[in-house]
Image (tube, rainbow, N blue to C red; front, side, top):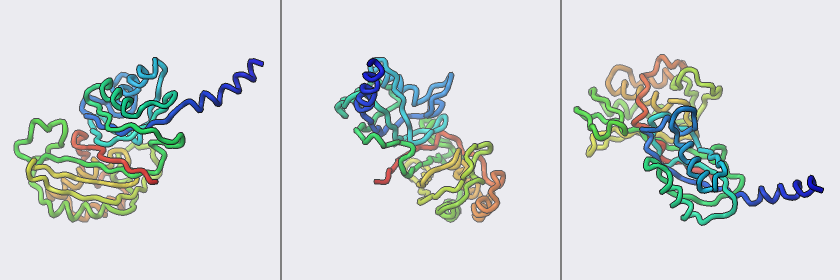
Length: 265
């Protein structure tokens, strides 16, 4: 009889769980990255601690749309989590926003269907990369823009960056040792603009996914092209040869921002 009662009760427990989607931003300077890891502060750990308190001590696990590395920032990271019963979305957002540390901000919280998954639902990502080209640099932005104090020709970067658009094997722009086997990705937008007020270069990349340190490696290569230490044709050479050694140095993490994630309907 006890076994039958437990079996009858199990589906009811599942039905009581409600899935929430949240959009967050965070200052990545004091984090070792988004993903939880031992002996280091992470965005995931801080949010899960807050959710556990809200959930009366019962552990809550969050799932992010992607990981960001140490020092990388986010303006529109997406995550999902499950909580018992339905809650007022704005009250839940306010509770999370006020109870998480000040370097995390909850922009929105909404109820979603049980089959929504922040990582596995089809989506595209947009990243921005800020490069401070001032001499001297802006010390107030030292954690939020990568400084590059050398001469640059913007027209060379503009010519080279368009070659990154489209579907390519980006092995040559991937950090060595990555465990991902399929390195083919599609970049739908790759552009750069000059922010005259801040004396910054603003790189924008949109696509269906990016490999480990891919954007930082692309930016490092583009800066070297702009500095005339590599030809514009180097982009095509790296893509064709799939050789990381042909690319430029890895740009620092402090200039990288996960700007937006868009899900397909």
